[in-house]
Amino acid sequence: MWRNPGAVAVTETDIYRGYIDCLNNQDWARLHRFIHDEVHYNSERVGLSGYRAMLERDFREIPDLYFDVQLLIAQPPFIASRLQFNCTPKGTFFGLPINGRKVSFSENVFYEFLNDRIRNVWSVIDKAAIEAQL
Image 1 (cartoon, one colour):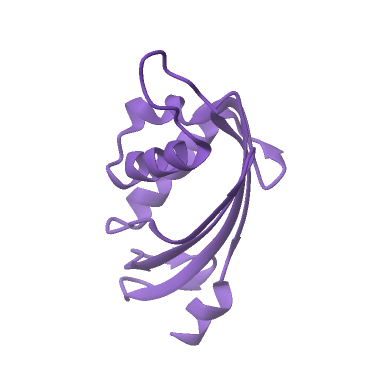
Image 2 (image 1 turned 90 degrees about the vertical axis):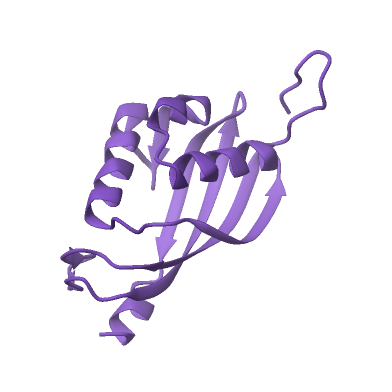
């Protein structure tokens, strides 16, 4: 847990909600506050720059992308979240020809924090839910 002298303690949950706000506002200049320089995504080291590039690509391919936290459970240094998406990918999405159709799906994702930043991300997206809408 991060402590700011003279202020209220900030928990991993607070940091996570700040991270989601950062994503939804595409505030890439603040991303380093939430993501560790040596971040791993699904066990692959992508680093902060690779993680940012992945997110920027997601927003280019899905202009109305919005991370909606449906469930959030914390057992520091871990956070588990179920995110809901209702969005309109431009073209092919997870190998599926979406081409501008509105789709709804969820993502179950686990995060591990190190020094108040996300160090590991394990993500599973409900591709079957997307396929069922096509």
